Length: 117
Figure 1 (tube, rainbow, N blue to C red):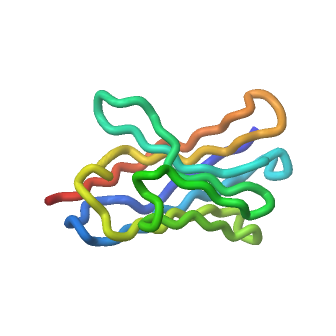
Figure 2 (tube, helix red, strand yellow):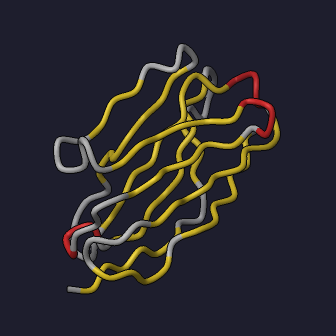
């Protein structure tokens, strides 16, 4: 089992920046990749960014060039730096771990990001 605890988020004006953190504990060795997803009201949960064991990164087209995913292996923590935020970035952001074994996905509790225009 892997437990994920998120921090960060909050309210920011358009054009501003926020940083999210996600600390992992438990069966760290079973993690293949870490990701951030987001879900706005009435919408599905969508992938925002993902980083794997080889530090390969991938981003949703909507955040490419504005968001950066990174990790600190010593702290078992993954980060999401969000710059040039837009009102359409408003959502609950969830940390996710892709696992080698069932249940194959672990989720954090979610943290609210609100961008005002």
